[in-house]
Length: 457
Image (tube, one colour):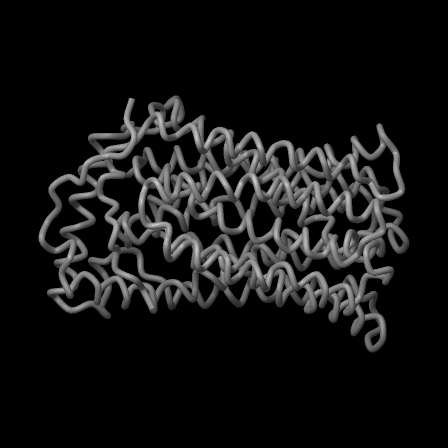
């Protein structure tokens, strides 16, 4: 039984000023574009929550079709995730991430022309197909650019796109709906879908010019910085090759890969079971129809979560801290999700908004911690397959969540839908138990984490 790995021999470059400078420059040059890509991706996959009622009234999209459409995104996502990752390894992150953004933007804009249940479901499936590979592609990309000891921090910066997309995207989506209904000849939800789809296309075009495939190609690094960064990355890559599976099939059959797939599946149930229905839940709590008021209130949890995610990512630099903090954040996710349902049933809007805010802060904070584990022992094509498998099957939690929430609400009908919310929290508790269980196994790559990691400002 192992508790914490001993620090292995690392090159002198690991603590050199040149490495710190290289990491800072790489973060400044690469992270803004990656955050923008995920910002738009998360916006386009979740803005459907703002159009739920309008689609039902204007196009006759039933509750069952909406739940199926909200979740079927993840079926297309899962089917094409691993092939997309392997193609990213072949063509390079710059081209492939740009391709993903442009094609999903076209599909996202096409939602403006939805006419019935079938078209809505088909477009949601195609949205998943075209976006497949973005998130794990970025995880792989960051693992090639940043040493293990600062990777959680980079994951956290990338994750900031989620709260940004909901903090800014919630009032943006609500505002576009209100603007479209009041000013244009089209329905507000059509204006929202089309405008936000175009944003993805623009982001994809920008990625072609702003992303760089590897440190070897980085003109913004001087020779000393490049050497320091490449020395450390080669050392870590060697450790990952020794410690983790090699090749596609060994990665897909590795028990640790499946272990973290289950954890991520539980996390995604909590995330999407909350996110898809957040506008409607807020609407019920404050007694307002979905519009700019609901959009502004819906932004509060993401605004708070923004700071929580950044703080945790910056300071969760050790194996023990990651495990302990992650376990408590999973527990908090479950407790506060259930609390939001109880508050809604009890007619306590302020308590409900507070619980939603704390739940969002918890599940945003635990995401980067969760991803730091597989990124520590997977490399090469094994990373493409293993990270793709974790993300694709884990994201099926986004398919299960709306169907499960709707199913519980239909099986045990209440005005507040509290039992559907409770079902989400149970999976967060399971994730907490499993993440705590990682104390009984460690990766050699974890030894590359040090207590005093260089901070990126």
